[in-house]
Image 1 (cartoon, rainbow, N blue to C red):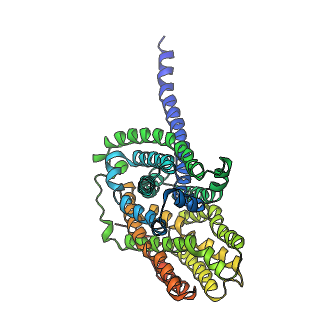
Image 2: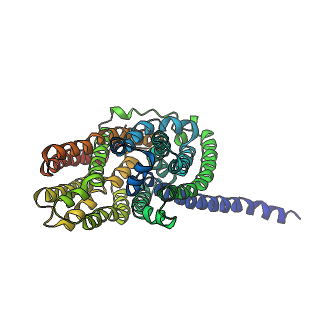
Image 3: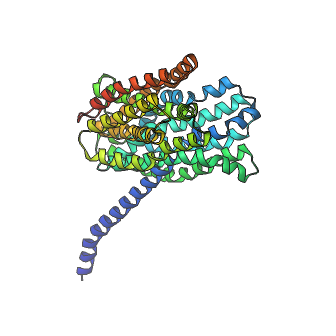
Length: 421
């Protein structure tokens, strides 16, 4: 008479285990979707504005000086706001902070095209950039916590999505505006829809993160694996952390120079505006597949120094070619610089691998990105000043070539198999 009850009792733990496995698999799929959607929204705030900047300036009465400052605002915002991400993550969990960041991006993108003054436009752009800043810092942390055995692959996946979002916003904003009767405001505001789509997955992930934190709090004092509390690693004293920060900053400098000035270099060399635009598109589009491949390969290696050096050599070759003869082999220079730009996903992968746990990765990501973005601010401005002072590109390009040398050195030290502790 008791056998059926005994069988049910024996089956119950098995059913619970199967339920936990199914729940874990669903959560991992949710995390993949959330990461990709967040990454798609990390650059349209910036890259969607350039194609319609002339119309926006005319409508808002924005001066050329203020428009020029817009190129430096993202890096400054990423540095300053990103530095508070660890404190927010300790209090609300990384998933909850990224959720708030995505909501800020959606709100800023939805409202900024429809205001009538430059200060409010800048403030709403700043709101969206602040959301991006905390996501920049915390996405490597989410990868480390949710996919500890696939850091490189997942970093490559969301880096690929980031490049795709940046390229799509640059290419599609004007056609979107045309679809709404040539209204630049509609072209800009349409990207709020993509940001809004990213919010629901992070709502679910934040709930799961809270459950994980509560469970781990019962096993580990303070729940340090989930929130960063209880582990106090002074990353500012770590040579590895400083190497990562310098590498991140110098690769960002190179990326901003390419985004800001590469088309002008080609146009000044005698190429048409259309050709210059296509060459710039090559450097951007290359990052979509290469980001995934390089980060995935880097994640399987214990030491990424060789990859960092190799990417730096590509950059040296590309800038040297532009310096010597920009019109001689422009497609080759564009490809070389497109490959060199993949230092960004490599830097993100190394951040995830140099921290031994989620708490360390939070601090390391905030430190490397905040210091790195601050380091990147003067570079594009100095390039512009040298160009204006000399009237040509030999001086500015020689300056960028010189910057590639410390980038290679920093990448070599950041890529060694050592923990930032």
